[in-house]
Image 1 (cartoon, rainbow, N blue to C red):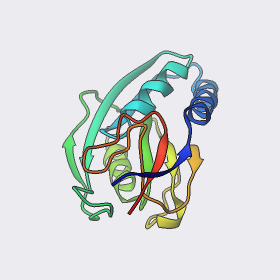
Image 2 (cartoon, rainbow, N blue to C red; image 1 turned 90 degrees about the horizontal axis):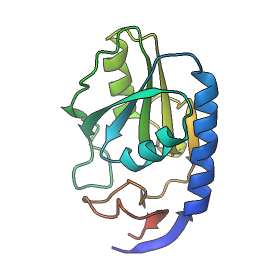
Image 3 (cartoon, rainbow, N blue to C red; image 1 turned 90 degrees about the vertical axis):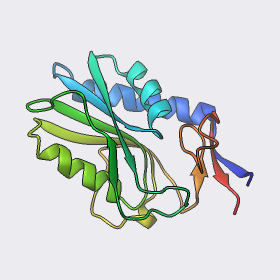
Image 4 (cartoon, rainbow, N blue to C red; image 1 turned 180 degrees about the horizontal axis):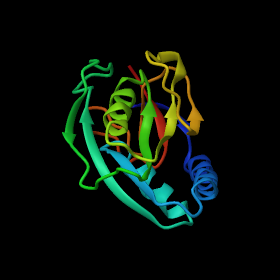
Length: 172
């Protein structure tokens, strides 16, 4: 498989991540913010995003699996790594690479809500609303994209392409 086209280049991504960081900084000014990255896909976006947030943040990670070696979600979400940090009474910002069906984020959000945080919001680099199977909506969205299978900037196919500095469409 090869990259069919570049959907979002480095400059577009960098500018939008900077804007999101400014908005998040303003929204959480004076608050105790825990940024939770969803591994593995969100690690590059989260790294760039937290460097654009001007207020102090703590970071933690969760890892899930719902795709395996497929380009379609299985609908079954497994938590592979849970948080190391208690979140009760904290403001939590979940950072994810993409909302596709919404199943994974809906599941994670419910798990985290049961732990009684002060608030939970979601930041995603990419939103693919045509594929949504839940009512979940992100609070911070980098880009809304069409229903194409994308890789790069942390997103992978079969553990490949994560390191690309852009988001590209994978040919079929």
